[in-house]
Length: 288
Image: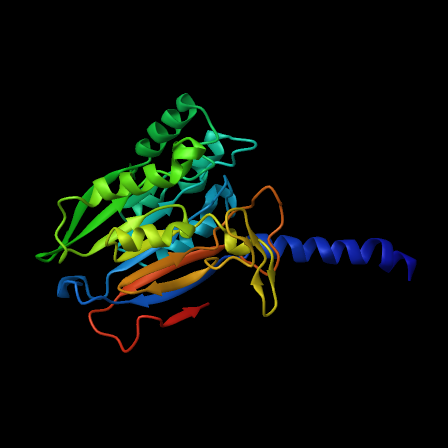
């Protein structure tokens, strides 16, 4: 009995913790807009976020196989490939290497990239580009498919600005980025922060991909995510798809750890959003 207590129980808890932090799940959402070109019907965007240098299996094989299985048309990485407290560029690159061979891949920075000095960030960006990943900070491109097009935008994390100036300068940054785009154009945004949803809506963004919150890191039954640094206890935007007016926000629960090393009731999360020209509701979702 003592052996079970002092050996068996710790082993069981360790096994449960390992599964909680390493079992890959996929959150799937279906989204539509009157602006969606017919040629983008069925288009699939796969999102990865908050890897924090984490890999899944030797050579990250489990993650790459799962991504390939989803057959994405586009892969987006919404920040924090580095773990800012113990940054290791080699590990960060290992966590995303091979993705661009599966689909065009775009990256925007998170706050953990901005924990580092400019030299390290530039080295990280150079290495990501060497892997065929597009650095999409403060950029705008048009994606084309069979005669139709949509606009893909990306912004830096607000921590690129001094604290007192963040709100105003971030709004100005995004406003400048969308300036000159037509109201009829479908605008997809990559931005690390979900708590800025009101800014995205005010700037006319149709669909934003974000992360940062880690699903609350610890997810309690019925109460869901526990905490986010900016949103506090039981954050409003923690995981899933949210809607306000004609704007939608997708929040990934992420794949890696935070300063708290354990994910509890919160498996690593791959997000897949499929575009549909016509669906009964934009709020349809399914997790597997």
